[in-house]
Image (cartoon, rainbow, N blue to C red; front, side, top):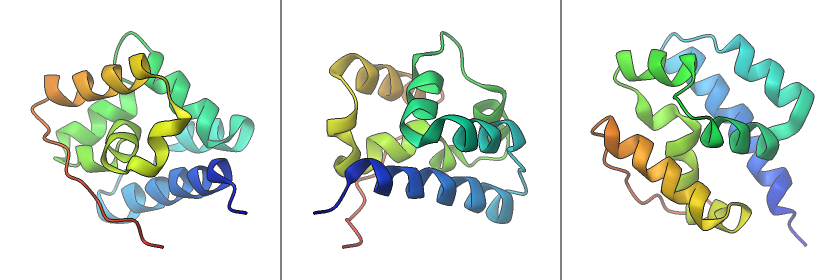
Amino acid sequence: MIDIEKLFDQAMFEVYRRAKIEAGYNATIFLQMLTDNGGLRTAKTLINSPKPSDGYTALHLRGRLDLTVEAVVIEDERWHSLFDDSELARARKRLHDFQYKPRARSNPD
């Protein structure tokens, strides 16, 4: 049986690596949060924060909101079951507020 939370952890570490390679953004605080708390708790903390994180802002300035936790969560339906409706709505609203249109991604199974 596949553990969806472990897959989500992997996705969060992958988005960290991609941000560093593709956008030149070394998200050290995000990496520390992932290491200390795991992907799901980190994502929930960031999504439930009243304002966007510094990392979100840095990625916005680089035109790479696709590398934010919010985009990863919203664009891949596999992760939706890990979040409640209000968290999904909050993530969608933050993306919308920054004029980012989420794209549906195919599952790489």
